[in-house]
Image 1 (cartoon, rainbow, N blue to C red):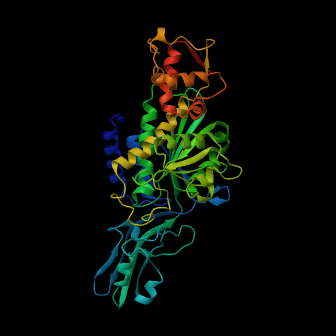
Image 2 (cartoon, rainbow, N blue to C red):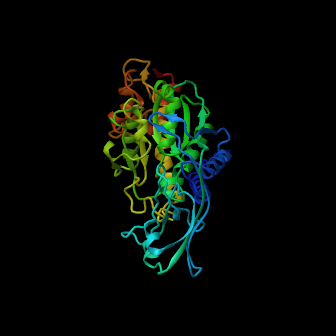
Length: 432
């Protein structure tokens, strides 16, 4: 594992990871998921890959059959190949059952999916829980289909197998935990898919390199929905006992926006961290409500589960025009976009690690000048450079956390962390 401390180097590295993950044909299950997790294991050697058998009951759901696909295409009777899975893995309806037959254009149309409003985009369409087959193509391709007969070919398997997911557990000084969860189940889409795993991997490397960790960390790489349901069915009791804050890492690669989707009630520590971090990093971020949910916060915050989990994103899923189409490609994301997605979550984690309740050990204001913390010449503007420190000190009574003090004095909490540590070094405060 290599830790990249230089922001530009880290940004470029994450983008390279995304390029290498982008072509893999992922789905809920199958070899594409295993190939993705194997790639991530190379970056995170402690990542464990788990397997859950088809048919396993997970709450109200059941782990589905495993799906693997080798080839798929539509060929006109003239020999012209219209679409080919190997050109773009979105061309096949996800979880298509095998088919190999000739049919008329009229019969074929019932198995085609396109977007009239986006004529140059291939849509991403799936049918996980009802057996069918189909192809996705641009509206331009569909409109240009010639008369005649077509051979349709999908070489796939739908059979009992396993659902795979990845889990990295990083121990800290306590069993109290922080969770990052991302998903590894979508085919070639950049912002909606590969941005999440690469940013989560970079964050995991950052956490592993910390010289000291107050919290333990649980980093998850799951198939969306069924993966989180499966994971919760096995670990809910532990998570309810230990989890302090969690973040869904998805759609963190473009440069257009920053977004926030709250937990179900919106009052958890994770929500506080997200709103504070975004306010002081990208104040024009888009704040959504629980009614706008759409990723795995649906499971982690479900009634009876109620874990402290929310999402910080770039352009939110479902809100940008390229979402769930072939237009969500590597040109949509960028190194800078990925680094921005990484930075807001890293800052939230940094705050959480330092979120003590500081308490002054002296009465009245401490004499900061003799400690080199305050100007020794008094003038009209003498307090300008130390105002944040003095305001911070004024709330250090052992009952208010670093994050709450940052909110009270309207200063980014990450600016207060070195102040707090310096005061502790001078034996002026203690951590409660």
